[in-house]
Image 1 (spheres, rainbow, N blue to C red):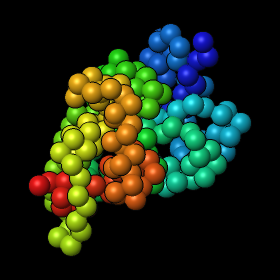
Image 2: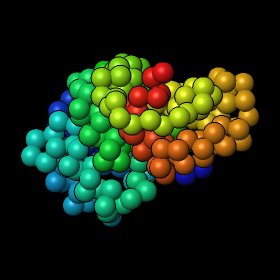
Image 3: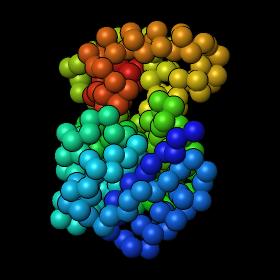
Image 4: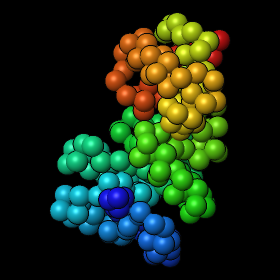
Length: 213
């Protein structure tokens, strides 16, 4: 089976080297590049052609969010997970809006990071529990009064599971429905919210009052 090739972008040398060596210890995963700056990584990412990038959000020079925008222009299908020491609501949403596929705290244990990367490859959108909780709290704060999108109870349940980073299979197991039923509900959700991806749905629902009723 093909290795999952990872790039790390982290300015803290200890964290960068620790993540790199730890990832290499897991079968099926290979760290093919570790960079201290966004600029350095962007020069080489196309040649390296990784599957996933783990990127610090608070980089010196070009920050992680700006780098996220740039790297998605170069490799649109590349999976990017933001890592940070901060549970910053605005940064979470800026990352999601600009195409981040997941968001983890740096204190997340390496086995949990590997589990999250496996979920990501299966179609999930990993978030640390703390981040997921803050996302849901921020939904309540940022919901405008004038928008009304009617979601069914089941659709709200599925969207809540989606925001927590669960895969289709996990959602179907948690809600005791088939994966095909999950996909059907997600299709309806996308149509109602006028979005085309899981992360767009999670981002947009932060502005919808009906989700909270």
